[in-house]
Image (cartoon, rainbow, N blue to C red; front, side):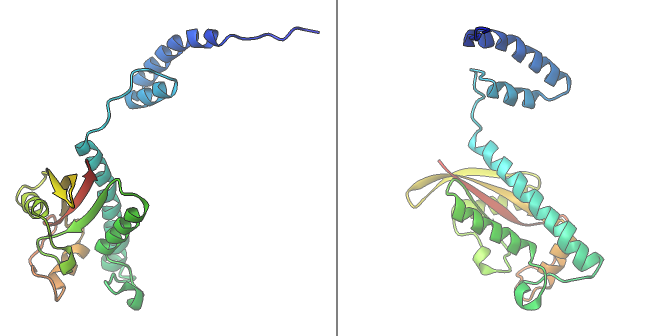
Length: 211
């Protein structure tokens, strides 16, 4: 009977540095430096990547929120309502058998996230809200909404204490990305402002991370 060969674990570990070097070089040649870092980390690389800052985490979260909101607004609502004129969007979408407004979809998502985690929260607010529940309530919210409205392209970052707990708070401009947004706000009977144009700042997304 052929004796069983026992491969020592050290032989695998000795080959790891060479394998990591080869992987790193190949991935970097393809412009996949970030992938190289992740792959090497999975291979047991000791040097850990520095943790993301509160601002970086908030920016990343907002990038996803803003992208989803823009896609729904442009690809679904604006296309079906304003271009193809197939179905309208309505704040009473259930009764009207219509599409939910982009702001409503955004709120539904925020409410669902709140049920799943307390690691962060977000909401859509405005200095000119159609729904009065969406007006700013804290100094940080008011200051942030005013800042992004007056400084297009810039975000607002601060910290605030609410209920005895400290938060990193970020405010990002909410832009009119489709004619459907402009028409809805300008024509709504409860809108405090009726002169919005494409590209205008209509409000802001407030993201909070507990510190």
